Length: 287
Length: 255
Image (cartoon, rainbow over all chains, first blue to last red):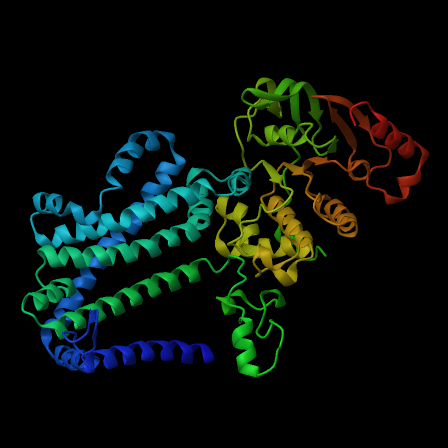
């Protein structure tokens, strides 16, 4: 409870500071006089929420990012496993991937414009490329780092290639794959917004840039807040799914820290205030 | 303890394993030379030797995970081509898949053999019960003790009804009391499976207790294979013949 209070307080304090600096038109090297106040932004936000465009923008951006990200997740994992497990695939694909990887996805806008018949597909392509490489690289690393005993055990139980892939490689690599997915969803947002700013029709990025060109600063902030909240929601979703699928990992976190325990009780109770992982509670309760 | 063992079909007879003039090791790094060893169907052969003498290499070769660098390795007079469900390997530790519950781990060989889910569930539960883990079937491996994990591994290896069980210091990481209990348990659950067992250990007493025969490894070769008097009989521990064999093993030049 205390921790939630702290989190809310932290956000409230930041908003309060913003309101204070902007409403007083404070100019001390950093100039807040031109800056919209929290109240301005909130008013603009309320106006947008009742309009239709806002929701079109939202669903457009979400559709783009989810399509690109899901494609990247599937193909990134598949390619990562392939490159890690097959020397032939590594020789054939490795150099290509390593050359394309350093190119920032947003720099592929010209390629996307040339290649794809519509803007929409171009944006999805850029989003895909952004997430693809983090997923690929972390999948490749964790597949290579898998404990060889697991594979040997399954093969001496009679398991063939596919059984090993399905029962050892994919589940064993999940923790690393989700590391890549978490990074990937973040990079995807950066790229989908940038791509929309450059070439989109509708979409949160497009709207934010439009507002900027017509000097509607509260509108720009509405866009930014929207991006922030959407990014947060999607990465939380990835994170929660990851935790659920890797609940088998032995964890030591999620034991209430000494700080929370002390403030909650007012006494210096030693750490194990909650169900510790060693008490044999069902694992679901720990994650 | 084996009340529900009727769910489990009797396994086929044990496999006969043989190495003829075999050189074993990883490519370019031979560890054992000129290995001539025949393991009779259904017998328990223990292999004892100091760390790094090639015990695990021998076992991995028998499992089919390593190919012999030279010579011949056969199962029932047919050359080995690779790992298979016929020869299950039990590892020293951490070979259970950590994301599967104990029951799901034991179900694995049954799933590989294509058994329908209800049947493999019943058999897995029955095997876990016979190694004393009836209470823990739904737990993840890291939620149980090291000894319990090894019992689960034993259940998993036997669930697939292998014709040979290859054990690589399976009790090496356990404390002395747990280890003695595990040895008794192993003898108990092996009874009636008919499986051939090759059991690698660095513990001479363990080798002499479990083995029908004991093979000594050292200096890159099999130095001796000896019959054990009254195997799997705790009371025979102080018997003169056993004591003499124990002395021979401990003073053999390789150890």
